[in-house]
Length: 162
Image (tube, rainbow, N blue to C red; front, top):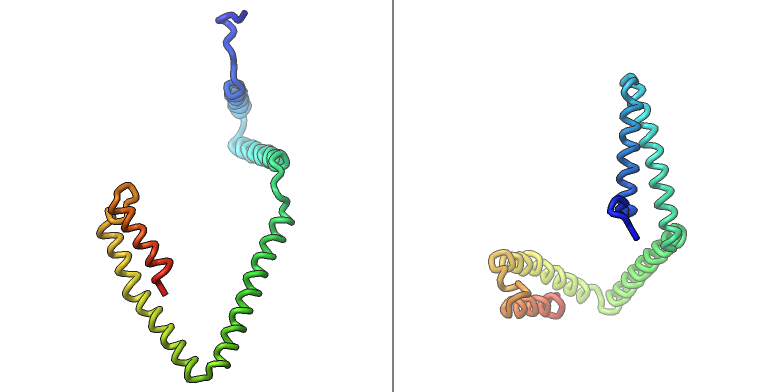
């Protein structure tokens, strides 16, 4: 049976009490010191805390079984290599198509692409931003009108946009 005089302490309460006592000890130690000694003590304490936090972080990373840095960097490099190879393949296919169609047809195709992208970025996109800014209720997912507007915008962006 527990007494009321012996309350149950949580781990957080114990930590806060210990931290309070440590702060009092540090304050008591720094009373008779000069400013330079006090600053040096603060730097030493900061270095100690940094090393302690780094050790705790390392321990938690090991507990959580995170991927090692080498594996992370290898996956990153492989992803970028895949992107680069696919880009070069697409460039090669574009060159092959350009050679197959001939110079004039390729030139016309590129001009058509430039005009369509110019219209998209000079007219359609600013108009879309203006509508979203002026009529936010048309895209609010909590209303029927907003859900319909969001669906229309999605269909345009995914299917109809060049």
